[in-house]
Image (cartoon, rainbow, N blue to C red):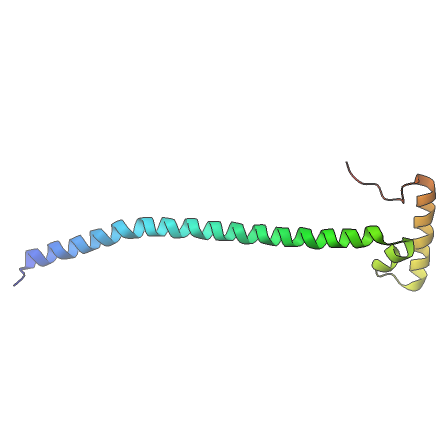
Length: 101
């Protein structure tokens, strides 16, 4: 039979083995979690940038009336918007849209 001292040694060995295994496993899991979160954030950023690019393309192709409609203005406000954009376009010669460089 296993004596009391041998049982204590076996138990202590099992506890020590579990402690040695759990440390690296915890660190691996933490690292994998960070990597997964970073990947998900990057994918979301790419998705948002694609949506914004599509919106920018749609707006760039629009004429003045289409641009004002895209803003969701009421009919009277759309006419005022077109008038102001046309006025700005005439003054600046660049469509009134100044892009940051």
